[in-house]
Length: 376
Image (tube, rainbow, N blue to C red; front, side, top):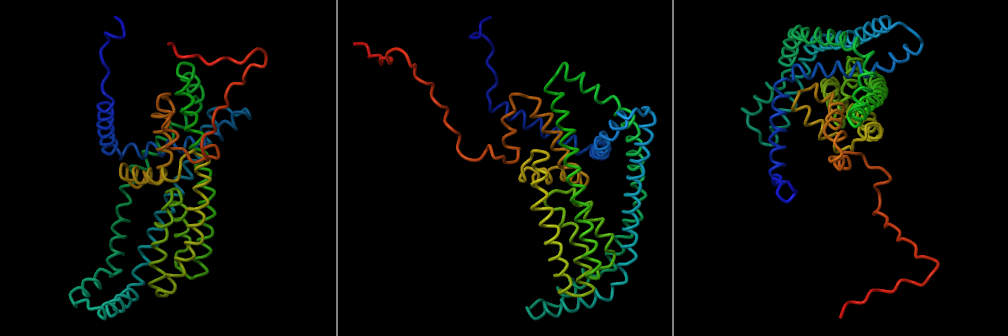
């Protein structure tokens, strides 16, 4: 059968609509399975991060079972230390907040008096004063702390999955080579995903440690309680691209308002803007873009999308999840390589108009070709 008698392809508009419908169905399935996908992907990212250490031990000639045991124990220690630190910080915060109930009431009264000058009625003032009651916030934090035990199931699941993934990591390189032998594009895409994820984790961890140390010292000098807790919070939120420092700013700024009034709160905001905004929103995204090949706009949109799809863990894992989606949807498909130009960070080669292709040189020997004359 010739090409003229072949069945016509679907119109491009229908293909686009079908693809969008399939994407919506997949997104709904991922959102329904977020309780499983989020922790599983987190465990995968941790194993990818420690894979170079495992290869270093292998080059030193260590037995595979010893390497696996050492890595599992090291990863377990880091995960458990981080989880216990977060739980202890929440507990300290829940016990410290009731001490500032009196300051919150005085602040609410001052704010109510200021609003009364602008014509706000007594009913609205009473509602505002009640909403500023710090005791209620302490009660909410206490309830949240009591529900931390519910996270133990996820923690146990992550630790168990880390064990199995760490055992399988020793053969990951051979698996990628087998895939690349049959599907070279898939092998290259998966290798690029792992490399980009490790580079992103290195950049984010280094900048996170710098920002956490600077924030802790600055808050301690200002006199904000629980400075180490807020430094830890700024380290964790550093993995949230672009807007992570805003989430870490709110608690110390509120404590500054309760302790020293608007002046101390303003000082905390200024310090955070100088340290966190400059480092996390101006300097770090350039390094992240160079490391993972994603533009700042794409990282911001990825943050909003994955946070909506998976939850808070999706905000922290937004960049690795985007790299995986790019590897599976763009990098392995030669027909979709054009989308990489929309996702990639700007490079010097993109600047300026395209250079015209030089014309072929005319022959040196012989007469110049005569232009053809129209017939008739």
